[in-house]
Each structure stands twice: as C-alpha cells, then as structure tokens.
Length: 395
Image 1 (spheres, rainbow, N blue to C red):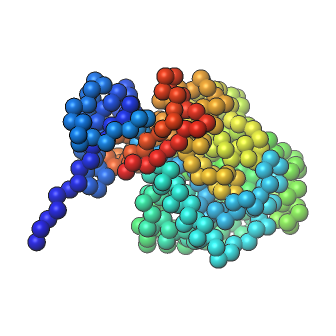
Image 2 (cartoon, one colour):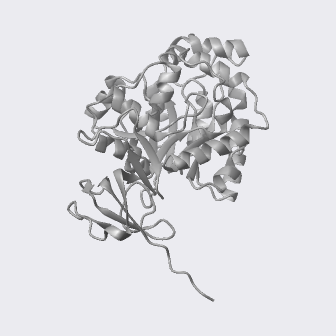
Image 3 (cartoon, one colour):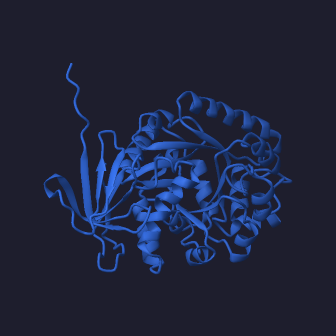
C-alpha cells in the first residue's frame, strides 16, 4: 500500500497578521494537509523559497470567528422591514412560519459563511433544525440553545424543551450552552431556572440593550415591544420581569464561563460600568443594528473603557449577508480611528477566547487550525479597509 505524503502549502502576503506579535511583512505560513499550521517564518520582508510559496497581494489573517448568529432564521431573508425598530421586527419574525425550504436556505448560508472566511461560529438555536448542517459543516459550531417566554406558568416546560434540544446536540457531538434570549422576552422565573441549568456553561450570551424600548417594557410594561406582544396575545396581565439590565447581568445569569452581551446598541458608559463582571465580552453586530434600529453602538466609548470586543453577524432576518468582513467594513467606515489590526483581533482571537476555543482558533501559530483568510482590495498605504475590500478563504 502506498501512503501519500501530507500536502504542505506555503502562503505569503504583503502582511500576515498572526495575532501573536507585530504583523509580518511578507512572512511565510506553512500549513499541512489537514489545515494545521506547522511553521511561521519572519522573513524581514524578503521571502526566500519563492518557487514554492503562494504569494498574495493583500493581507492574511486567521479565520474569522462569528460570535452571534441565528442560522435557523435564514429563511427570513428579505421578509422583514428595515428601519422600523425592534418592536416591529419582533412582530414580523413571529408571524412568518417555517417552510420546507428553511433547511436549504440555512445550508446555503453555512456554505457562504465558510467561503467568506468564518471558521468558528456561536449559533443561537431554538430547535435542532440546523444540527445536521452543522454536523457536516466545514465551520465549527457551538450551539447556544436559547429559551424565552413571558408566561410564568410555562417556564418549566420551556426548560424541558431546551434540555431535549441539548440532548440531540450532545448526541451529534456539537458543543452547547444554555442561554436566555433577552431581558424583554424572558420571565424572571425562567431566568432563574435557566441560571441553574446553565451553571456549567463555557459561554453564555444575551441580547443586550439592542433598543431603547427594552427599558420602557421593564419599567412601565409599555412601548413598542409591549405593543407587539399585546397584538399577538402573549403579553401577561401582570408580567413578572427582571428589574433592569444591570441586575440581570449581575444576579440572574450564571457566573460560570464567559458572558457575551450582544448588540449593545444603546448602552451608556454608566450602564457599562455597572455591569462589569469577570470574563465579559461585548459583541457587535453593526449591520443588524443599522437594519433594525438605524443606529450603531458607541464603539469609541467601548474602546475607551477597554472592553473585550467581539463580532457577530446576527441572522439573515436582519442582515443581507452573514459576513464578518462586511461587519468590519461598517465599523471601519463609521469609526475610522479604529486600527485595522484591532479590528482583526475583534474578529478572530477575541472571539475564539470568548468561546473557549483559543487552543485551535484565533491566531496563526504552530499546532493551531485557524484557517487562513486573504483580505484584498485594502488601502495598503494607510492599512485601512475600503468599501470594495473583500475576504477570500485560502484554507
């Protein structure tokens, strides 16, 4: 029997961002046949083995990490109104029923994410509908099994349901965590049951301060979100909700593992300082924020407060494409003082660390399998993304 040797490939570009030190000018990365990095060479700008090196006129970064996605909502692409606010958006999501084409569209979205350079994805799910896709995907998934509900009497039934979903995830070998949806959609008793259930979580996430209407619902049981709930008949006569966003983070969510606050569109410096706890990560989904609320998070404030920032795409219900690259371009456009190298870290190593997967993803160094992504069409002189910049998976 003839044993084929492993196929080794060498990649170089104008710059390689390894996330382990300064960017390497025309460095060389060697990858073995299964995608593992076997070597990283600093050539001081002068690669030597030119005949065996695949050289690209752009920058190479580790595979992207998508820290917030809803793959199972892929069938809602183009079916929701943009710019009408979160309350209106929730109502539209609730009225659209699943169809036989849902899985096909989710599968297409999965392939697109991989091609766009996403190597690792934390996917929020309410059922096992997409699990077969994830099991066979080239993207590594972590299931964030979500629950919500305002009906206090139904809280235990909802917990029983997510446990069944988790059992399927475990059987298929897909890692999972139990997570609440949001302060405006989860009763206090359900939060407390979920806190106990998720006591072994590696990572927990919650949609956080995505709209101003969230606080109005908690304080007065009114506003756009309450109107939507009333219109579909799910608003209790006497809702039993959490006190506020701060109390939820500090007291109603498991203290184990990392906590990911998703969106943060309307977070203030005051609230940010109040919710500080160990292992806190702020996930930005700018395309979704623009789509739903036509508003972006206070990114400069988050950087001033030295937050651990990570990136998500949200779903095709509130986005045109599940692309980390597109999210970074929005951030670069609206917050030009953010250095490209910092954006790369948000989209790679920070996300890998938030999900507890930094042993394989997030950096380009021997022994890891992060995937390699080429970013082309940049302003190389100023090291900035342009509207025409694009990402291409190399491996």
